[in-house]
Image 1 (cartoon, rainbow, N blue to C red):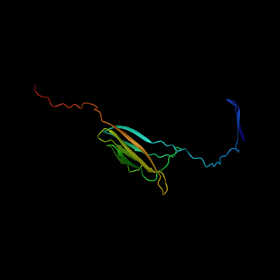
Image 2: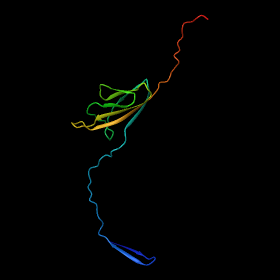
Image 3: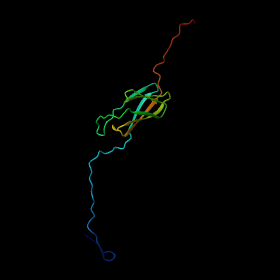
Image 4: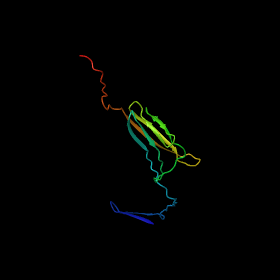
Length: 147
C-alpha cells in the first residue's frame, strides 16, 4: 500500500509513504454474559419515632427470577438511633425508629452461593424518622368546683 501527498504551495513537493498491509486483530470470542449493573441498592423509608416497619427479603436473580439464599440475612445498624430485630424466619426483620428524629442506616447482607463458598450480596436501608405530631388535645375535665 502506498500513500502519496502532493503539496504545491509555496513550492511543489511530493511525499510518498509506503506501508505494509494493514495489521489485523486476533479475536477471541467467549460466551455471552449478562451486563453487571453497578448501582447501589438503597431502600429509603419514612416513619415517625413511634413506629417500626417490617421488611421481607425476596432475593431474585439478575433476570428477575426468585432464588433462595444460603442461610438467614444479617442486618447491621450502621449509623443512627434506630434498632433492628430479625424475625425467626431469617428472611424478614423490623427496622425500629429511635426516639430522636433523624436517619438510621442499615446494611442487609446475605450469602448468594448455595454451595460451600460464600458470595455476599448487600443492600442498604435508610430509615428517615420524623417526630410524632399531636393528633388531638387530649382534653381531661376535672370535677365541677364552686365559683
